[in-house]
Length: 387
View 1: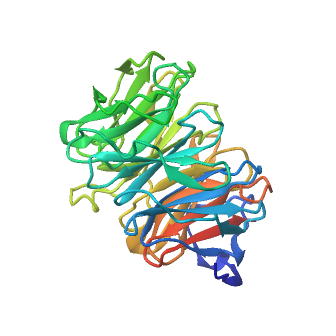
View 2: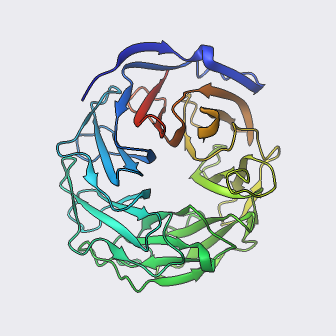
């Protein structure tokens, strides 16, 4: 892999939009191997320890080259491609789910394949290498095709299951796993809101230890919360679906006010969906029982036509911060959050290359989360370290 070695302070590219920047973040800096070549048109990105060395690794879905790039971390913010990377990931991999699908103690990957009615599953070897599960891809009769994928134990049998959206009929499909890398392709379909386009996620939003399902509903302008009973059954939480601004396009789950309860950061992007309304970031604060209310000030201003969102503690104060990408504006917006259920400050950071996928995680063990950005326009991943 070629190494682009440079040191560039990005503080000069920051434009403060509100309030005073928190003293916890003095700058974001790209140093050493800060841009890494990947496949064609990188989109979704995730972080996990794929080779069990205790260091975070990067997983990138390359939309146009139909594969996944695995970058193994050195624990200092540097990365090298795993042997054999990139690996085939099916047609136009649009979203990534990470789990142990065959219960061998090694992390595996699942992809939603845009414009196809199937999910691709790759089994990990514990060293950063991946091969297709024996029966992959797994067909699922969604309408019209898959966009998002998430995983969790949805029926309490100890096996990882998959869920994807069927936005053409306002449903999600659950594929139960057998713990051997296979999934029930007949699917269990659950009703959600109107047009659950792009993203579906699994998390425990009511603190009962059971997996719940969350969708943003593009044409419903709301978010559906399906509470799981731990046996494969689901019902909407009281008050669901919850209003969340115009054309919710993507979302992330995390605690953004330090109350120990999961919140939702939602990208509103009617401009990208050719609908009327206001672009921006809507934050829904969770009450810990499956209920959500909109944070005062939502939607917050972002860059042009916002696309993806991530949550992580960028300044080491124990509160989840929020980043939003805007490919058309060639920038990301970083929101530093406070424990007063408010935005402490927001800054626009010019990054170029049509930034798309985002993830916030501590890559160099300094206690502050760093930002990883897929640059859809120049086929690289940028690593920005918090200092």
